[in-house]
Length: 362
Image (cartoon, rainbow, N blue to C red; front, side, top):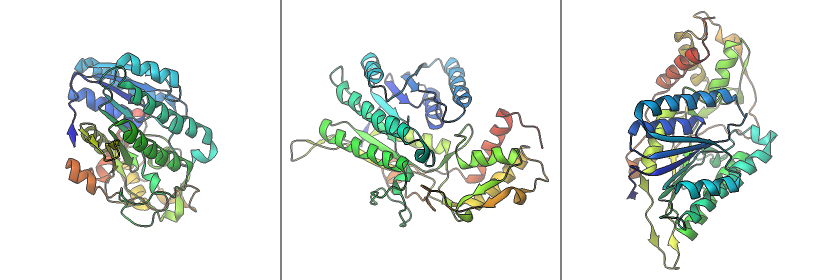
């Protein structure tokens, strides 16, 4: 693995108003490497844009404290002209592509946006990285978000990066697998160092409202019934947002080495990592801890009857019964393994939720 120093580098982060993107921007700013961070996001309405603006406001406050160089630009990675001009203007050294249309179930309802953002958008990023060497030294490292969804209905657990992942059970998963294949081809043909990250169920404060823990909280506050899929027989490898960000930071600065192959083309400087807790939790246990922490934070009343507000239902199309990360490669290459326990993570979320939504005890 080669090393990249972020000091004085121009860094592009796509999806910068998103959950992972905004937290990554904050971490880079806190590290104060005197780099120039350019963040882009289309600020779409897949979920309440006010949460995205909230994240951007937090970044702006931190920028003023740290006097870091930061610029946010509203734009869409599926707009090739926009991406080309952006790369020409800023001569990025590091690109972190986190922009994507997320969500398994939504991909069934609105497939077009997945093809635009996840396929064409990522292709535009790859093409811009390819041509960046014509305007300067070229991209030192492309890091991009994949997903644990690529493992599909894989019954072998834990999921290892060397497992066969050719049987996706959702369009979203298929687009993420396509990203990995495209990145490999561009690494092979154009010697672009790239690393894909398979995230496992990311959660935490200011997260995505479409994620189960967030949706459960909203419904419990509204005294609505929450539906627990597969009759509660689901396991998820929940990974706290801070652990995800630490993993990305370590990956950014450790680059797959460039080597020449016998065919005259580069041996692809290409890596894939799982970033997950490596400890799947039963969904019912997860929800039990969640409601305990919501009560402790004053989001729910002390006498809240949780059992009256839950309903066990069948599995939804595109879902899988278990996710479970094998993080061996992450530990071996980077000496890192996520370690935030579930109760700590959900406590932090509950405290944030109480403050953000100004919840009065029920």
